[in-house]
Length: 230
Image (cartoon, rainbow, N blue to C red):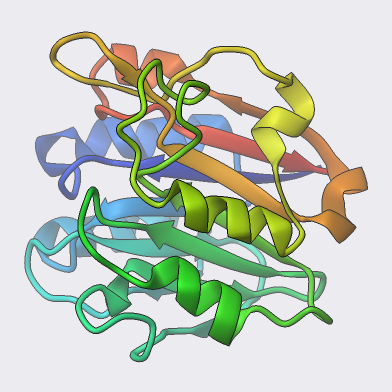
């Protein structure tokens, strides 16, 4: 069983890093994608400790200091790619790890900011001959399904992404249940965190779920997401 963990660790993790690392170890994923990762002392602490946990293969978005980016950590050998051309402002918001069976894109799409990251994937990057997976905090979803209201941006681009042949792994397993990965101070729930898989990989999806206890216990303000392939 291959387990992929994706998790928005909230502003680099800060003083919560020891708890975050403990949670990562407990969830026993071979591949970990962290969004809101920071390339500063906090990020260095995470990277160093992830090596100690066996995640020797790492790719991190090109930022400095406390800019939110994304990082992929893997116990499995992988190639990597960064994308200077992905977006004029948010080129650091998507990175790629290349495995023998698929390409994995880790993403942290900015919340309600103008970007062309979906267009980059759809028009410039995806190769129909190579199965791909996209995981991370996309900061969007389906209105009235992944939230009660209709405030999501980029729903049209998300639908175009699905038309390209990508499936929402959570919905593939769980159908139309109401479940959220982040809550506002007003108590409104949003499913911002997603795992999308190439249609050619759908038969390999064994499970897709959230670990809400880590959000509820304030390890982060987002629930980590697990995608299991087998």
